Length: 265
Image (tube, rainbow, N blue to C red):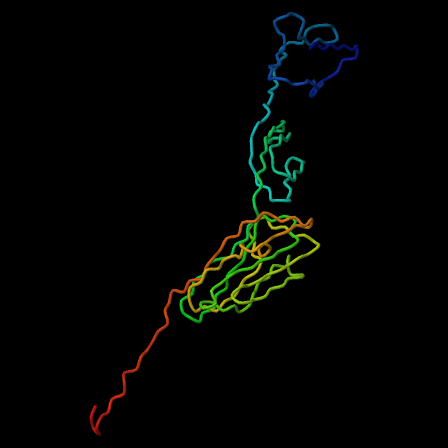
């Protein structure tokens, strides 16, 4: 690149002369051609060379595009957003992003569908008659519009007391009932709810007299299902729990009656 300039009216310069703009495809040095006489000179109004001029070389460094891979989970019916793009189905996608260095970043993104999860917790009490609160949690559920649950327990060991801590997202149209050792739950709403991280839906409160499993009644179609607003069943993993009693009931037995004479012990 060559640049020339002259003017019969001398100038005093101290600062930026001009900018050069390049299309960068690779790194390159920028060096003044001091070996060729006349290529790099400053002259005064008399055409005399101005002495002691220093020419400082520069360069352009081309930062490399970043290539990376990433795997993320996507819930059934959910979405995942990255680099200004939104995806609603599992698969492998190529994204053009911007890296931290300002250059293009090519990301190969793999989205893996994960099932929603419903789990009932485990709990332990010390003595018969103690009351225990067991959480029912949900995760990875997108566009959730309907819930149907049926939880079995041993009526010889547990007595259902109540529920507590109802999540506000399912507070409308929430129904719960207890029949013959089975807690049944139903909910629907035209405004879908979304649960990504594990979240408590509600708690179940039991009076404990012994050990009991807490099992989902998945064998009966429709008893344990999640649905979206389109009426589609959301693939769901149901995890059972249990209640354990560590203590035992103390039993005190009085000795049989004894006949004593007056003054005897």
